[in-house]
Length: 111
Image 1 (spheres, rainbow, N blue to C red):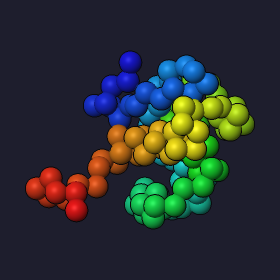
Image 2 (cartoon, helix red, strand yellow):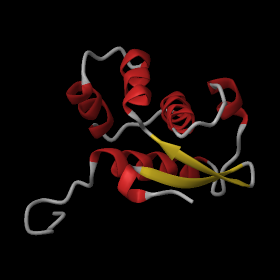
Image 3 (tube, rainbow, N blue to C red):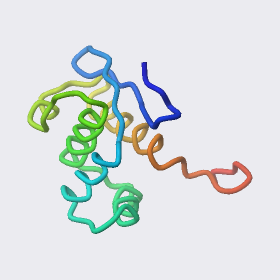
């Protein structure tokens, strides 16, 4: 069971529930994968609203490994998610939100 207070999320991949978490090590892995120098640049990279399938594989893979699941990116690339591409995007969104927080402005107004 995922613990949202630890930044964990649950995702169903290949019909199985998995826990994902972007630990500090997983974030370092993503900094290397996306060739950015720090977490601020990583957040900026994710905030642009563009997400490739390769990005999703890297983010989901790092989240799976961060939660202790022994999977590599090749295995992640072969996994399926309910809803297809939209399902993968939702998993990435939930994971990034759990890690970095939402985009709500002060006062709770997201606009």
